[in-house]
Amino acid sequence: MILMIWRKPNNQTYSMCGICGFVNYRDDKLLSRMTQILGHRGPDSGGFFISSSVSFGHRRLSIIDLSNKGKQPMFNEDKTVVIVFNGEIFNFQELREKLIKSGHKFKSKTDTETVVHCYEQYGIEKTVSQLRGFFAFVLWDSKRKTIFLVRDRIGVKPLYYFQEGKKLFFASEIKAILECEEIKKTVNEPAYKQYLVFQASLGEETMFEGIKKVLPATITAFKEGKLVKTKYWELKKNDEINDLGEKEKAERFKDLLLESVETRLISDVPLGVLLSGGLDSSSIVALMSELGKKQIKTFSVGFGEPDDELKYARLVANRYKTDHTEIIIKPKEIQKVLTEIVWHQDEPLADGGGIATYLTAAEVNKHVKVVLVGEGGDEFFGGYSWYKLGLPELDILPEEIKKRIYFYLTTFSRQGLYPDFKKMFDKNRVDFLSKMMKFEIENILPNSLCMKVDKMTSAFGLEAREPFLDHKLGEFCFSLSAKDKVRLNSGKVLFRKVMKNKLPEEILKRKKHGFLLPTQRWLNGELNDFTKEMLFARSSFVCKMFSRKELENLFIQKKYFNEIERINLLWRLFIFELWYNMYFIKKN
Image (tube, rainbow, N blue to C red):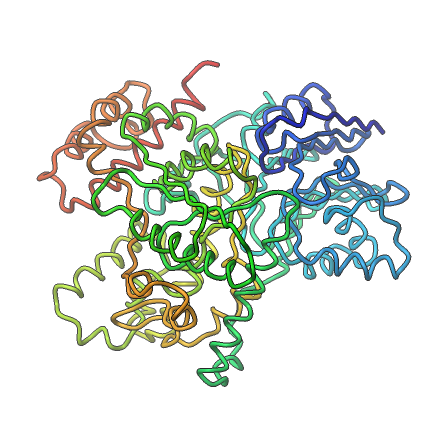
C-alpha cells in the first residue's frame, strides 16, 4: 500500500473536490495525470492511495476542518476500508456522536471520516440512507473485495465510470477517465439525439460511448468484474401531507426551508448568494437574514439587456442591505470563453445559463469560497409555465394561450424521447402534473442544471450549495397537492404565501422569467460567422446528421417553422460542435 499527500501554498484559489481512480489496473503515471487534471476541483491538498487491487486519487477543497487532518484518501482504524469523497454531509456531526458512543475512533472532524465509520457500523445501504447532503464517493472494502460508487439522491455531484471486463475506471469528470489511452473516444449517437431535445444526455449514458454516469440515489457495487446497481431512495408522494390544513402546510414548509438554508450555512470559510432577482434566490437571502446572517454577500449578472434581472436583484439587495456586486457580461467576452466552458463541462450542455454562471464565478471567487444558489425551486415547487398543462382549468384559457402552452408539449414529445405526456394528460391532469415534475427532477435536474452549476462553479474555486435540493424538503413539496403549487395565474403558490412580507411585492408577483441569454442576438450577430464556420466545417459531426440545405435553412429566419425552435436547435448544434472539435478533432 502506498499513500502520498502533498500540500499547496495557502494563496491558491479554491474549488470543489475531485476524485478518481481505477480497479484491477496499475499505472501510477496515469493516476497522477488523472488527479492533476482535476486540480481545479481541489487545490488545497491532494493525495494517492495505491494497492495491488485499487488506486485512488483525490484533490481536496477545505470547507470543514481546514487542518491537514482532513486529507484524503481516508481510512478506518485498521485501514481495511478507504474512501475518496466529494461533497458535504450536513448531518455528519450528529452521526459522528453516535459512532463515537459505539466505540469508533476519529482522527479528524470531517464528514468524510464519518462516512467511513458509518459504513463499518451499518453497511453501505444503511449508511447512505442516513446521509443528508450532496455527495459522490467511492469506497473500497478490501476484506469483501468490493468497491462502491455512490451518488446523492438528486444527483447534485457528478461521478462517471468506464468498465472493461474486470477493469473499472472512475472520476468526478470525464476528462480524467479519458487520460487512459486504452479508452477509445466514440460519440454516443443515442445520447446525441437526447441532447438535441433536452440540452443534455439523460440517464446513465454520456456523450462518450461506454462512459457511464452513476445514477442519482444509486449504489453501484463492483466485484469480480460484475456491476450491481441498487437504488436507495425514491421520490414518492406522502398522502398524509395533504391531510394537513393550509396553515399547517405553510408552517411545515417554512420550517423545512429554514432548516435547509441553515444547514447550508455551516462553513469555516466565507459564503455568499448568487442572486438572480427571481423568487428562489431572493428567498434564500431573506431566510439567511431571518436566521441572523449579517453582511450577506450577493452577486448578480446581466448582459446589458433592457429586460435583464439586475433591477429585481437590487430590490432584494437594498431591502436586506447586502454587500452586493453586479457583473455585466459583454458580447465580446462570449466567444473567448466558450471553449473554456465546453472543456469544463465534459459533455455538451446547451443550457445558456452556464455561460452566466461561469463568468459570474470568475468574479465571485475573489470574494467567497461557498455560494448558495436557487436551483431546484422550479422543479419542486411548480415554477414552469408548462406545469399548467396539469390543471383542469386549462379549458377556460383563450385559444392563443393554449397554443403557446401546447407548444411545450410537442417540443417535449419530439422523437419519442419524452414519456407520452399526451396520454397522461387526457387521462388525469393532476397525475400528469406530478409525473411531469418527477421526470424533470429525475432527469433534467441531475443531467443539465446540477451539472451546469457544479462544473461552472468548480472551474473557479467555488462550492455551490442548493437549499431547494434538500431531499426532505423535496419529499414534502412533491407530496403537496396541485393547488398548492400551480394556479392558472401563478406557480409556486404555497412558496409565495410563505414568503409574503419577506420580499418586495415586485418579486412576489413577478411571473416566471427564467435567465434569458441573448442567444438570438448572438447567433444572428456576433457569433454568426463563428457558428457557420463550426457547423459547415468538413470535419463537423453535424454534417453527418443534417444535409447542407437543412443547415443553411437554420440561418434563415423565414425558412424555419418557429423562431424559438430555430434558435434553440442552432444553439445546441453550435455548442455540440465546439465540444466535438475540442475532444475529437483538435490535437493537443
